[in-house]
Length: 76
Image 1 (tube, rainbow, N blue to C red):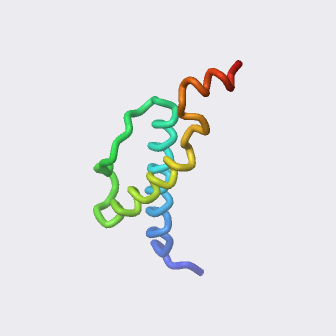
Image 2: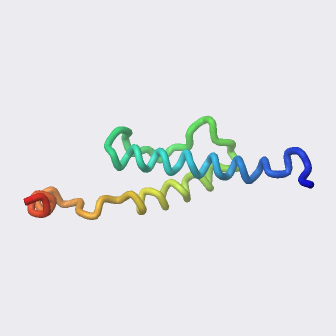
Image 3: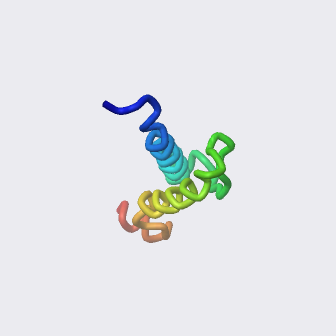
């Protein structure tokens, strides 16, 4: 049987990962400006983890076609 609080570090890591994913997705949808600062809610010892995951999700959510002219060609 697991001790109370044993999984807290994993839960915090997952929450930080979710926040990074949410930020990157909002940027992709153009609902949020691109920021490179760590939110106040993230503990200092998790700041580097947040920034690494934010970069990962930005790459994942990067539009396939970033050139507006090519985008119009694809839509036509």
